[in-house]
Amino acid sequence: MGLYRDEGVVLRTQKLGEADRIITVLTREHGRIRAVGKGVRRTRSKFGSRLEPFTHVDLQVYEGRSLDVVQQAETITSYGDRVVDDYARYTSGTAMLETAERLTAEEKEPSVQQFLLLVGGLRTLAEAAHGPGLVLDAFLLRSLAVAGYAASFDDCARCARPGPHPFFNVPAGGAVCGTCRPGGSVSPARETLDLLAALLSGNWVAADAAEVRHRREGSGLVAAYLQWHLERGLRSLPMVERT
Image 1 (cartoon, rainbow, N blue to C red):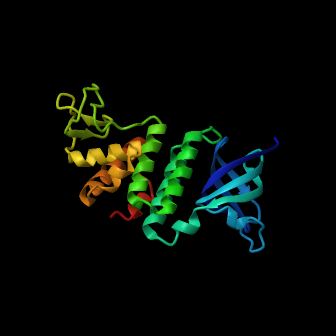
Image 2: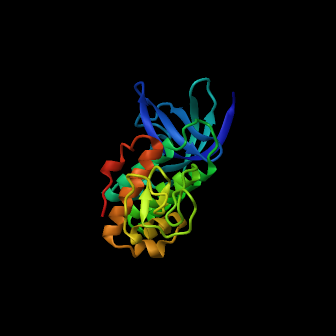
Image 3: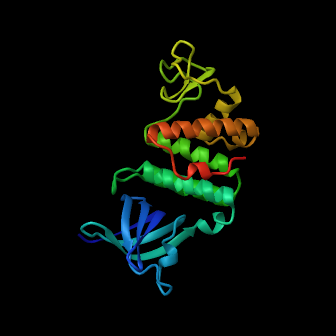
């Protein structure tokens, strides 16, 4: 047991007793941790406001037997200040936080890439340079890829035959050719698959130019793909405002 220091993003909080909270944080070096913030619900708490969801914090934590304990907390960036007043950005951000927690199933298992994706995603969301739905879908696709579930939007996900191919199948891993096409495959617009490929690769020029109908169709495919690999949907995803 001892002290350790790390930076992280607060994913969620839970009440504990009369004045404490359990803080779930995705950290850079220690992965996802849960730690008690003692007295943070009191109005005179030194760092209660620093331990709220959407906050990028620098933490000093005491390693306990069951739950760690937050000793110090300093705000690096508070993304919540820039997203909570906009419903579309707030709901998209909430879905990002939940996804980050779900894709880091093991506590204290380092996941630097997921941490960096989350910080970058929240920064992009707060800057409002792109549509919230596009930022969310880009984050979901990249997070799934980091977790080992990268979708194919061009070559066949089963036989690797060069595409583009007209069919998409979630259990198969994305685009599939006519020969490999399983039952239940769908035929999305080619522009929709191009949009998802652009979001995965970070081609924002192409993504921002996509038509609304292709964004909607793409969001449906992303949600289905995420739900398949998580084995159940996100609680927050149905609340996301889609343009």
